[in-house]
Amino acid sequence: MARKFAAGLGLFLRRGTQRTGKSHVFEVGSLLRRTFNWALLIGLGVFAGASQAAVISAGPPTTTVPAALSDPIATLSSPLPANEFLLPIKITGANVLQDWSFDVTFNGGVVTPLDLSGLFQSVYQTEFNAVNTALSDITSSGFPGVGVLAGIAGFSFGASGDGLLAFVLFEFLPGHSPTEDPGIGIGNVTLNEQAPAPGTLVLLIPALAALGLRRRKTA
Image (cartoon, rainbow, N blue to C red):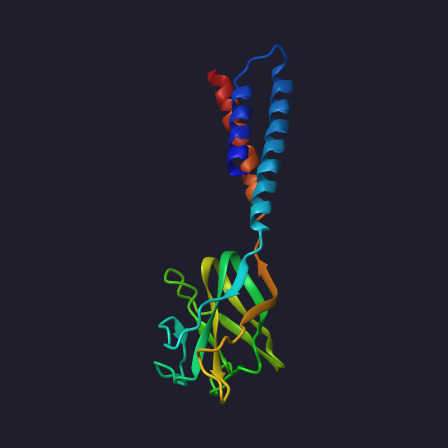
């Protein structure tokens, strides 16, 4: 899509260098109309790219406590006991991420969320990634149900790219072992990402018009 916009913009600028027999006023008006149209198309492309939803998913379980995880009251020790694991919740393709929520589903006959009296029960804050080390703000630790921890929610302060949202602590039920599939899934995802500011288009229109006029004068 970006290549199409670039190609179209190049065609627009080349046409802007062609001389016609029409009046200067008409030429300026025509140039501004074409400038507005191209700015609108480019803006729609930007908004279309921004509207592509990011993806929240579960990462591979870990039995060690990652350095990115926040546990200020030291409820966890690394490595974890043999019947426990941490489930990382990750996001890919975030674009100025704001608030988010999701459900974690699991095989309730094999595992269950484990509350060790942490700040957010079985849910732990985490740094987004190595570059953006801001901690996620957990606003809901979820509501336990049969085979689901529903409504885990938080805020990520405008994070973009790929990163982590939270960790969820699980334990295997008595009679079950880590060799069994816990049946983890992510569902009921909602997220809010900030769209590009409309002011970007306002700045783009006069810039394109000025560039087109300059090219026309030097032709």
